[in-house]
Length: 64
Image (cartoon, rainbow, N blue to C red):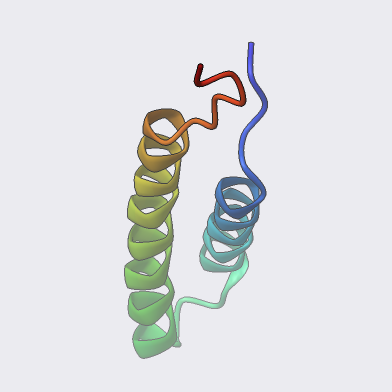
């Protein structure tokens, strides 16, 4: 099993951090919660894109 790329790992960690902040944020800050939910969705979409691109582009050193 191949490891994730560094970009995918960073995006996943950032998405988890945003999600944790949404869960522990006070409910009175509706604008902040909404922005963090959008940010979480964007980061997860970028994470999925990084996974797809990481699998598709492979380096093969033996091209003879």
